[in-house]
Amino acid sequence: MSFIFDHIAIGASSLEQGVEFIEQKLGVKIPFSGVHDQMGTHNHLMQIGDGIFLELIAINPAATPANAPQKRWFDLDNPQLQQQLKHQPKLLTWVARTPDLKSETTDLSVDIGDIHHVSRGALTWQITIPKNGKLTEHGLFPTLIEWQNNQTPAPHMADLGIKLTSFTLTHPQPENFNSLLKNFKNSQQFELSIEQGEYNLAATFTNTNGDIIKL
Image (tube, rainbow, N blue to C red; front, side, top):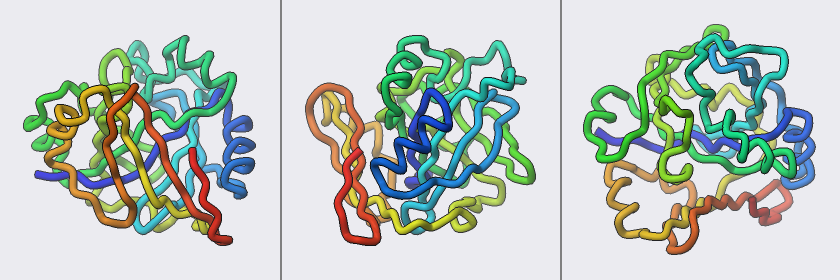
């Protein structure tokens, strides 16, 4: 089995803060998408390439997670991360899709948690979430997702002219980490690189003016 790039997740202290951050950085107003009742979160979405998208996500202050005591996804219940997000939104992790999530997870040598069935309106999917909500390898290893009928919702999202051109994963032991990604297949839409250093994720985009923007 293999998995391919699906989307990146940017966390914010609130959606209002996140929308302002995206507008300042990328020059576009990312549209609202919906709420995740099971996780007590809500999001905004937009395309950043062919079949790939950017998700801006925050805790929904008006909701209580239906999945409690399961921790929210993307480590959003972590008090330390919450303090960081109050200062500024942050690129948390990336998500990769696979046509058979159950088979994919049995092959892995890293713990990515349990498979959860999630829905939002007519959209349903399965996704991996650790019990403690933590991000695997500090967010460098992707959360895995299987969309219903293997159909990504990306083509139905707003295309505001923002394109992902490179995605860099920085890890203290890049060779060991690279072996964890042996099943990852890059679509070649953008450059994905693994560098040595402190744990970090970085994304580079272009807009309709050809400007290069780094997050």
